[in-house]
Length: 365
Image 1 (cartoon, rainbow, N blue to C red):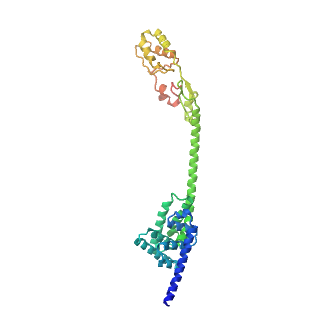
Image 2: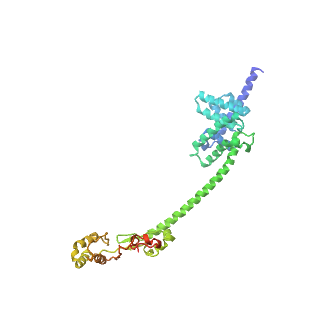
Image 3: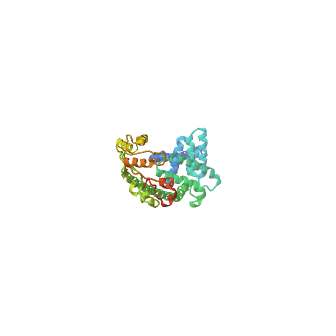
């Protein structure tokens, strides 16, 4: 073979490479969507594989030639399209990434591995396969929070499919590449994940519906409570209960005798003119002026009757009980008398010996 023959042969090969590069560049410029351009390079080629994109190798050659024009290993890989040539090209790109301090070359080397690797059935390619898997996971973590949901789903299928290939190689053709196989295995794996997600979603929706119904019930009860006339200066609501509480069977006996005052604003007794009450008491108890003034002191300036606890001390027959009864009568409030020497706490708190009857205390009654 002459020197000119060698030159012609080289030019022919160069023309093939240049044509592939130009074809790939044209494909890149015309087909890539905006969202695809924002993806890490490795995920970009993974998605092209999932979509069955054409001229993937040509696209990759075009990018390699921009940084490493005339690289002989690129020509060999393009011509032979063998896994061995692809791994040699990837190793060369890794070497140049270090010597040229060019991180882009390292990502290109991972893309060459992605497009070249066969199924991981041999220990010879497993380290390269594992490296691409780590790069896929790292890239997916970067974009999964901000990318479109549908795009994330497609990429997740591929990443999971790639990771599962060592255990699922029997599901695909042994002659298919790792990238093509990952694109097929991913959706198979996703079926069960989707079913589990649907079950979890149904459960979540059911729980939210139950919580909504519970909130609506509480809202209705609260609205009904709000319909209760509010307590004012001249009234008081002794007991507020929601509708579920009113229907509680455990409270049925307790509520029986006092149901009429639940959620009802009860009117307070208006205070009478204090000078009239004082005069009447002084007429009946002239010796107790100091006690009368002390007992009426809490009512000064009040519109309704409210007397604090009072303890009358004196000899038997001194008129203590009669004074307390007359004080209540003149103020317009009922007076109830109990013998403390024989009473237990039930009369004042609804407890102790009357617990079995669920009877409320005397003050509520």
